[in-house]
Each structure stands twice: as structure tokens, then as C-alpha cells.
Image (cartoon, rainbow, N blue to C red; front, side, top):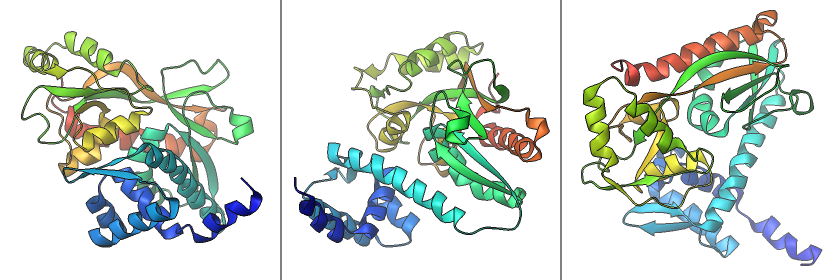
Length: 315
């Protein structure tokens, strides 16, 4: 492809439509995207159609009043998600505020998208003198080269002996899906490559559960599963698929609590500890840095509040 062949697309690609696409792809619903963007359902559809015409590709499949990303749509969404996150971070740095502490926080992608980002405004209200710059990443982190101050991770890997690890919350997991998904069994189990053993971890935890009632509900659910679907590449995609009615996914209570509270998802068997948890990592003790200490305490409190309604009656 010649250099000049790139120019027409760059000049005509509708940037507003890209933003609408990004929201619609995240929600997997034109109606919910319209609510978030404060526009009509028709406006979302027109923007998506404009983008598809500009690219010459279908980005969504429309079936039974639901929308699903095509292969091209998934690839584009992976880029637009990072693009708009980076844009928001950059814009925030263009407006120097009053003297404040700035923390660069690295957080696992699904936890960042589905839990932390919706609560950043609450942190800012509680700690107006601390500015958070969020990076979405998982697994090991090179604090120095990435310029990271605090990393929020699930404790499912070895991070070495040089880092300070402070516990944040236990992980609670359980099957989730649409309110109508569990009305007629059997139901498809949705899998993800990034948590390949999520269903096995849940089954193991349920076998060890002390509650006979929970165990009986689990047996009914376990025997209802249809053959496994091909795994999704990322954990958040399996949760998006559950929200689109494709089956049941194993969800972390923190990552689905907002949708449970809104009634968009249900967890018919509840949640149970899977033995893992979330930690905050730092190169220095949190107590030595007031901003880090404030973030640590806020994270612990906010995570506990998010889970409390859904684990209150668990023994």
C-alpha cells in the first residue's frame, strides 16, 4: 500500500462515530450506549452505520434485537478502548491543578473498566489533593520503566521479593447472566482464556461450601450446563457475553456488582471465595507515602462496600 493510500481514510474517518462505536461496543447495546451518551437510539445506529460505511466493514452482527461484535469489531474495539483511555489521561495532564500528590496506578483491565473507573470521581471527592493517572495492565509490572507508583493485581502470580504487597479484598466469584438466562435450563457456560480455570475454581469452592442449601443449588446448576462454548480472549469479554444473553459466565462480585444492583444481571447461586484475592503493590511501604496510604484505605473500603450486599448472607 502506498503512502498516499492512507490519507483518504485518515481524512474521512468519523471520529465522533468512533466514540459512539466504543461505547456501543463496551455496552453491547445501542440502547444503553444511547443512555450513556445522552442521545437517541437512532443517533447511535446512524453513527455506527456511518463508521461501517467509511471502513467498508460490518462491526456488529444484529440478531434477535441484540448486537454482537464481529471479528473486525472486536479488533477495532481493542484499539478504541485504549485510544480513548489514553486520550482521557492526556487531557487530564493538560490542566495543571493546585499542588497535589500524583499517583500513577496500574490496574488489571477488567477491574479497571468495570469497577475502578466508575468510582474515580468518588475518590477525587474524598481526596481532592490526590491525582490518579490510571494505566490498564495485568500481570507483572516494571515499576521503574512504566513509571508506576501502585499496581492493583489479583494474587495469582509471583511478583518477586522486592515489592510491598498490601491485601485489598478476597475474591468472590459466581455464575452471572441475564435475569431471563436461568429461567430455562440448560445454559451455556462461557469461558475466558485469561481465567481459564474459573469454572473449575468455582466448582471446587462450592464443593467445600458448608451450606447444604448452596450445595444443592450448585448441583442443580452444574448438571444443567450445555457443552462449553469456545473461550473468549479476555475476562471482560465473557462478562459482556453474559450481559448479551449468550449464557452464564463466572463473574467477580466487584466486576458485576453495578449490573447486579441495576438488575441487568443476576447471580442465582450467589458468590463464594475462590481462595485468591486482590493486592496493592508498591516499591515502598504505603505508610511512608500519605497519598499511597490514602489510596490503600479507600480501595479497601470501596471494595468492601461494593461486595457487601452480595456476600452479606454467605457463611
